Amino acid sequence: MHSELSAAPGTRMPEHRLAISERGSFTFASCSCGWYAPARRSRDLARREGAVHLAESGVEPD
Image 1 (tube, rainbow, N blue to C red):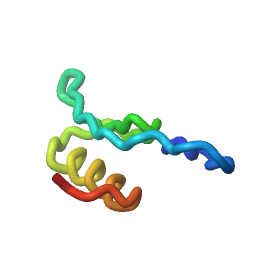
Image 2 (image 1 turned 180 degrees about the vertical axis):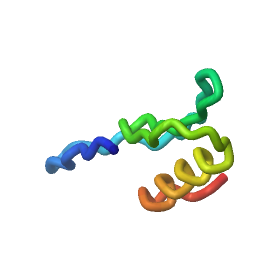
Image 3 (image 1 turned 60 degrees about the horizontal axis):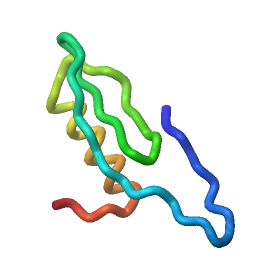
Image 4 (image 1 turned 45 degrees about the horizontal axis):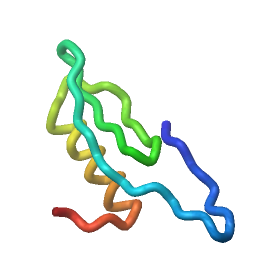
């Protein structure tokens, strides 16, 4: 479900910027690193999945 970029020596991993998008009655979370969650009808669930991704990536909440 998500993209795993290898961290070769001397390279930087991309920053994590979460975006919550809506298409019709569906909402989904995606990240600038390439990760994305499946479309959900629940906005709250899409936001929680995005927050979990950020936490697992070591990003501090705002």
